[in-house]
Image (cartoon, rainbow, N blue to C red; front, side, top):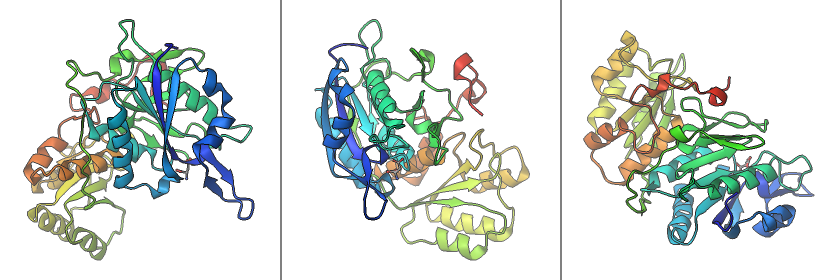
Length: 360
Ligand code: ASP
């Protein structure tokens, strides 16, 4: 552990800091003092820790872009004062918030590590203590030249550090609750923390932090299923002010070839709505040229989300629309990797790296 590093802990809520309401038995969020009292180790961790918290702390299922903005503002205001940031967040929507922050924090050159837990910190078998302590250690870690070891937005959970915009929640009850299917993990925490340095993103020439806080919420995720009706598709695509759609398709980006479906999509595209094709499969990527059913989507103007997670595609779309780009510019930028969220260089074939091998 690098000594004398200063870390800002941003506590937003989530299971990690919850206790059972004695009347209802439901978990409710408590303020940070409670959390701190349950992890006395924080006082002897070897770096200076300061705390900011959302008031009141919330269950992450209630998260909104306004709260993403609050978290980004805390990081922006304190950026020069700390060496790294740890965000404590509920697991339910952690991959959305962490993806959103990865797009908001342009030119980031310090670690921002998200973590949380499946069991509250006051429970004997909690996973929160280890997640929290290791996240702090990662945020404080440096290279031999003193530069931060992981200067990007990440999620640390149960042994693995993942790029934030590549991770998704995969289990409602296991400690191993997050996975990064299409990009190798950035570190593995066992007895030692072993970093996968080659896969960690760093700015070649740090440009300084620029925080873009505008998100446009006029977007939707439309998940296809066999039997989906024209009424449902048309109702969703006909939502007033709709500007972006993440279309979750089958396999390598396939969808029904039915005329009504293609026409409904074409009408939305003609109104300037950007439609991004991502696959429902957690692993693999969209290749609209592979089957005729995907090819039809490409022909009418859908954008490929490649191997993007739904969370990353959605928050990227909200971010780009929020920045005021035209549909044409957004279509182009969706095909570029802004923060390592998609593998556009064939890197999806290079996942296998010893202990960083993708987990099943
Ligand atoms: N409902 C909780 C939340 O996301 C779950 C968790 O933290 O694990 O805030």
